[in-house]
Image (tube, rainbow, N blue to C red; front, side):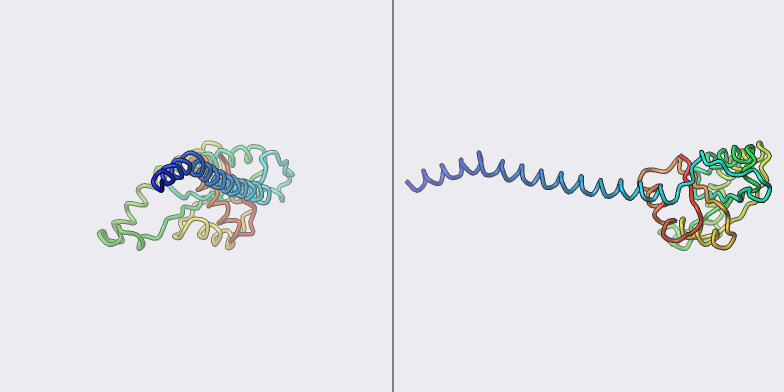
Amino acid sequence: MQSALKRRFSGKLRSEVLPSCLHRVRDVALTGFLRVLRIVLQLIDTLYAEMEVSKSVCWPKSEYSMLRLLIPVVDSGGAVQAARHAAFLYLEHCVSEVELLEVLEPIDEGRAAAFHSRSALRRHEKHIMLDALIQTCSVLEDAGVPYKWKRVFGHGARAIAAYAAKTQPDVVVIDASHFGFFRRLTMLAGLWRVTTRPVTMVH
């Protein structure tokens, strides 16, 4: 009798209770995921609304109101799209000067520093960035855009913000065309926290 009750109870547990619990767990997980996704999308909308300088803005064409742009080159992907955006604005008489900022990560961090000399790591990093700089500079040169070039060492957004605070460009133009979703979000959030200069991302 007792074994029969056990079998009946276990059968009811498998057929009714467990599926119900699984459905509830799935519903809770899905609700939590959608809530997090909604928060992330709201954050992106807020960051873009506060930081992005629209391409459709019509700046005055007066000599005294032309913009100085800062274009960071943060990896081997370069900043070709940002340079094209700057070239377009220059031809529209909206930009007076562009400054390219090559950002190199500190070489004394990470596992590679334990196996290679600082000079070898630095030469390797500069070699990787060389093609990116050449391509970016070529776009500006072909359009006749006057530009300067500077190299700094540091971590992404903080290095850009520190240099922007020193030189006070009118707009920081980030080439995000080769960034993934989360890298774009991280870069925007990082710059939003540490700089007061206007920032636009070119996709």
